[in-house]
Image (cartoon, rainbow, N blue to C red; front, side, top):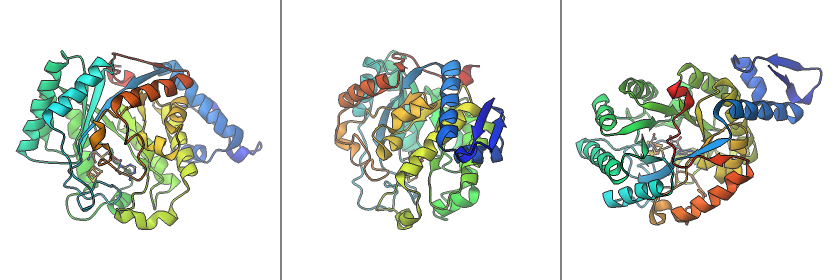
Length: 365
Ligand code: SAM
Ligand code: SF4
């Protein structure tokens, strides 16, 4: 049981069951301040320690191509942004990055790109998955994050050795989704959900998530997002603040956004509440959090997150995977990121689980 005082008002104490939170409870928790906020964070930290331990898993993130046929209105690498220098890592560069992860005990990698479709892309990923498994003696858990694909494509990639897939729904509010994407037939909320279901049916450990602090988004939307995650029984979750990019259509709404420090606070509360609602899932401390606050990821770990995705994309390409303005670590090489992360995680009192796949306890349970 968590006792929550809303807005620091002693007369307004709610008793909430820590795992059966309804929409109203969540909205209240998202508004907590002062002692009540502290209680929320402490409860989440306890739930995390008891259920997944004070352990952080690393996923080496390889942003292998910024080519994309989609045009999401918030994303810096959308196809309509002609200012982006498009790149596509060679197969050797990707396999080398995977070997770097393996040699450094990361246990797991994420291959992420813009959304590309077609037989050539399908076969390329298949070939890469097989090459990486051979080069690393099957030691790496491989996650893909390459957007919406047909059932057969997902099946081929699963059979070639990818066992996890990340695809955010961005928001659970279908109307808001439509405002964040062009109505050109390529950006359908229903299709996104359909793909998530197919991924699960195919056997993938499926991850999803949302952006926080989007224009037009309400606290009720965020509560619905958490309920969506809980009801859909996902095992990996990545939630980060929405960050504006000046070369995107959504930039024109920047004056309507909540300030960055409030976006950070809301994201931390979302993570804390999610940890209380979904005790044994893997929750990522996202790079976007680090952009909004230099210690944003560490703060997320302290309130419930247990996964960090060090960027191991070769430094040369990082500036061109700019989803939002001021993305951090774009000038650094993978070794720099590893060293700085080790020091950062030590401050949170957590241990890095080197050499482990770090499957979600929820998946294996
Ligand atoms: N193309 C794939 C897809 O969309 O699923 C994977 C790569 S995409 C760049 C990964 C995630 O980046 C998106 O799901 C979205 O949540 C996030 N993202 C894109 N633009 C963002 C922004 N301006 N602020 C915060 N996150 C953003
Ligand atoms: Fe492409 Fe993903 Fe960016 Fe949308 S969010 S434009 S699908 S890279």
